[in-house]
Image (cartoon, rainbow, N blue to C red):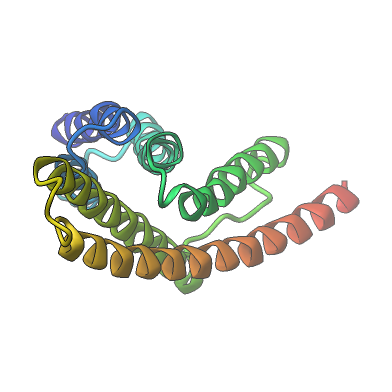
Length: 201
């Protein structure tokens, strides 16, 4: 199936994405991989619906690809970034939330009523925006370090990249903080529904 092939391909993109961010690689290429995987996430769903290729396996690897993309970006920045590590750690909230919801859904099959609400969509969009901006910030920071190393006697070497990186970093922090807050709100909602389902037996 074409849609499954696209999903598997974008899932594999998380490997070089993590490596580039964690081990000092080209963060601009990492950004291209992150954005490309996000674009493929939209494309493979449309292809699956257009070609009537929807299947339980496709849904499983699509969900896995989404989770691994977030995990690769968050862990890559946490491991490889000095300036934006603390901001990226907000993304751990998304990983924990997914683990908790998946566990509750496993314990209460068909009873949790997981749905993609407007809040969920906005949360996902702001998380993607926040991580994208942090990768941009990291790319500018690495560019600034390279410029400073190439021109050690120039006082303002890399200053422009530092400034743009700081702006992107602050934007990413705000977007991730907003998304993390919404994530906590939705997690509380799922937990309350789970408690009602457990009580009902």
